[in-house]
Length: 215
Image 1 (cartoon, rainbow, N blue to C red):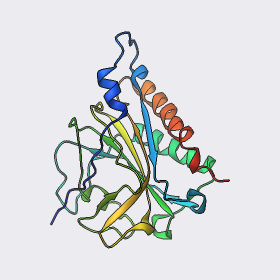
Image 2 (cartoon, one colour):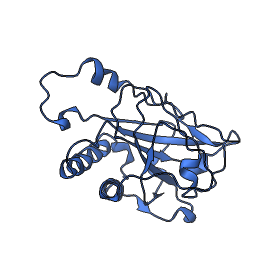
Image 3 (cartoon, rainbow, N blue to C red):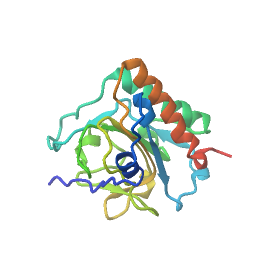
Image 4 (cartoon, rainbow, N blue to C red):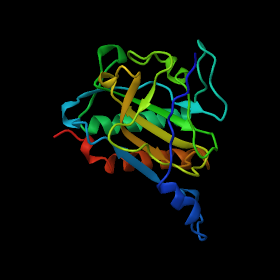
């Protein structure tokens, strides 16, 4: 039986985007916002390896409930920039990429939201296509040590990065998310503009997350 992940993303920062949006905005990149959060219960210095899928999934308003089928993915012209920048920053911070079949310490999952709801969720089938290590039907995400990141009123095209911890899977069938980055409403504008902003904002998400850097 399909169970929807209780991934409720709420929003602290985006309340400011809606209620305090400037009237003098000229360029779309002036509205870019980067939000990050992490679990203080995790000692990141003890984690060394990561795995990351080679595609970025697209989360839509409608449910994904067709087992055995792949979800939709964003265009490679954007996905390659997103994944390349994440790898570049992870490597620069001292992490080593490895196969998902090689027991990585963490798994980094990347998606783009095209839903327009205040809260959103998505079911396990979105990541079943990749074969998340040890992952099974009906499982969901858990945010240890902090309230799930709040995103209210984000724009379509927001990028979500989740760093998950496979070794933390418990009897309650939840996978700990130990670091999250939400980049608000990026996929607007020309291709060159979008890719430049993607690179800048992903860099910013790591600048805001110095705890990920290896000693």
